[in-house]
Length: 277
Image (cartoon, rainbow, N blue to C red; front, side, top):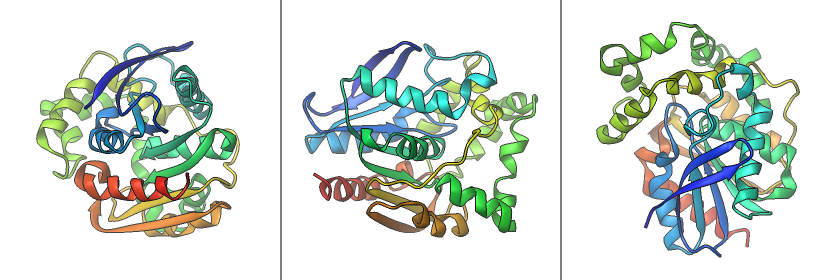
């Protein structure tokens, strides 16, 4: 069911997985750190079986063909540009967008800046950037949760994460992701330059502007055991969506939603997409 693709853009070739008929309704998936497009394998296959054309690509730094060295090349404008470039290369003038973790942040910025390109938006874990920024200012719990974002900018982060058979990297997954998949992520990020490229997303600095409200139909799924994002920003995210909005709270689920509860998430996505023909 799963195809391997190379998506050619002006920035280089992005590796991708895909499923479903070429003429199916297009759905694009964006992964997070420290993962890759395969985190969406179950959902891509499930939607493909339903007749959608589902594609998940390894984003900038994760695809060896698009791995610039400078942290400045990983700013939000470049990441948003990659999403549009991949969609253009696939021949998609409009599409449904799904993102998790860092991919979720990029998805919010795409929806805010280019709503005319999206039929719907679905974000897993990551609150709207405006809601998160407000929580960082006012909520001590969220401030503590987000401390890693600053810590990971240090130059010794790669060495620390990969030491002792990447023990620190493996522990991030909280034993909620299948060990074979964790091994795959570790193998990928152990390649020369790969982990530095992934960490450059954090080192690029904050976006120059402020993300505005999102007008497209949106599903936001947040899990109660998420270590990175607390309830303050999650509950406030609806204030940043002016289009139809659905909030799903997943009880007793960790940050790693796509792989911990793959069938549940696939079902939520099917319901969301079928609501907006």
